[in-house]
Amino acid sequence: MDSCIRSFDGRTFYATDFNCCPHCGCTEIKKNGKTKGGRQRWICGGCHRTFTGRSGTVLFSSKLKPMQIKNMFSLLIDGSTLRQAGHMANVSLQTALLWRRKIEKVRRLREFPKLSGNIHVDETYVNVARSGDLSSKRGVSKNKLRIAVAVDDRGHCLAKVSGYGMPKIQESERDFESLVEKGSCVTHDDSNYGHAFSGCLETAVNSKDRNSHCLMNPVNRFCCQVQRIFAVHLRIHRSNVQKYLDTLCADYMSDREEFPEFLRENREKIFSSGIMLRRSDVYGYSATL
Image (cartoon, rainbow, N blue to C red; front, side):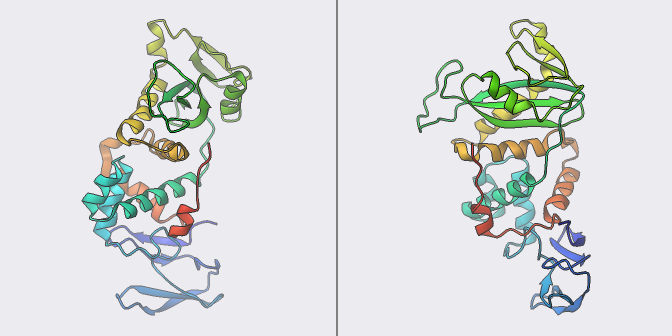
């Protein structure tokens, strides 16, 4: 269902007008006095339920002040750790974690577009232990988590958990076959991707050649951003890896030189998404590898 919010105040983090009732979707709504805090209340003519400016949003039931929400949201979007965000916003570590999960879930609900045009494909490996062993081994061992990555020239990207160790042909086909449009130009290293790019123009690059670094630069830069996640956020549990990757994909190719505008656009997308999340909704969600 589309968002019922017509306009949203980014200073107070309250909706100032609605298109329909966030409970039943009825358009017969009217003002119904104000709350004890002086906030506008509406009533629905269909279900006869009342709602306020935070009903139907991720801010529902939140007791945080607007400045706390703004500070914590800005830090979490910028990739800060939970302790940094909680300290600057003056909230507990559990509250900062709850808000990270809310942001991750709202972003994960949208579908990422298919890659097309000029596409660069690769894999990167991180030390996320399979059985609790945090020891780091040289090379691509079976204990290293494999992440399939791809970027195109339109600013779209892919980062998904693929498995452990070197990929098999069937695994490469599973990761890329349904996410790449036919007729695209795909550049990858000399690994065997099987029929993952059937119907596309493929260019295999020798990874040991010096010129390969120039040809694979777009995807190599994205791999560095993936690696940065695991350098900043230590000891990420393997069940949460895909959540961090989805957040990275949502932020990819954003103009960070205009950071205030970047934050404003994200606030509008998340707080006006029409998705209401309680604590039980957030912690009942889990990603599977």
